[in-house]
Length: 373
Image (tube, rainbow, N blue to C red; front, side, top):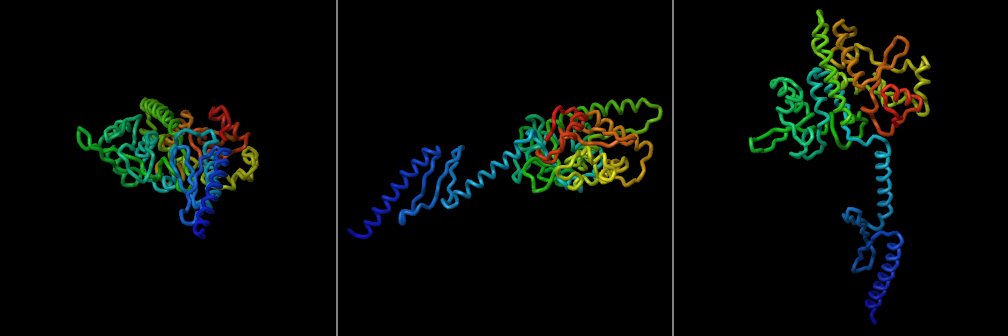
């Protein structure tokens, strides 16, 4: 008998033995695993592991352990994302929004942009005609947006063109029976829904925002009507949604205070209590709370150090509306007033925790009912 035949029978016996062992392994683990055999050498070179969704991945056998480690890591990441209580759809606001939009857009235009955020699409590199700004299931075209904003056609078109120019939106054309219709979609820039590009972003709960916007607009109409009945009018316009957009960029991720140094990681260190820090005069001084004129500058794009009477009245009216709408909370210390953003609307990460005592303060302030962790 030739050596060739002996080698072939040897390889066949080894393959059969391996299959018997593998069947026992499959029965024990309840997994389906098959091997790819090199017909010339009899070497086991690959493993095929069907997933639950029946898609088959072929990976090197030597990488099986690495594959399992990767799946474990992916599961840990998924658990991190879902173990928190924040599972509602949200949009993300990037640092570019603060740098390029806040202070450069008029309050009226910024207010209109905020009103479309609850209806935004998922952002992706590939443009889809169905993946556009929608209210319910209805895609919003130019006239729909103008009606939503309650502005003139000239003004509405101007805003849309500016959003496109600045890379916030892009135009999507669709051929309908009534002709070529233009829709719009948010791009993966400034404000987006989709994968984060490795930066800390402010997240906005979309359902909560949609319900709050209607309250804000209603309160704004009431405030403007009351002002119109005064003999001496202090202001003629209010855009609290624009103020909200400006202030959310200054939200500190652990305390939710509106601060200049909102991204300072040393303000509240690991294991420290916010309430104790606020009671310590030295540590409290490190909190650079936004002053009224600074809020005004963010809101109006100005650079003033002192507000005129009518400017102060407009700002305070906007703040009052945001407090009534539960977007902001007002925390008083002595004769000073400080503002916090509602963590039920804005957050940085679902698992950024603050201490229980401070949690009680925030829950009481916003009526959240339970700790947000």
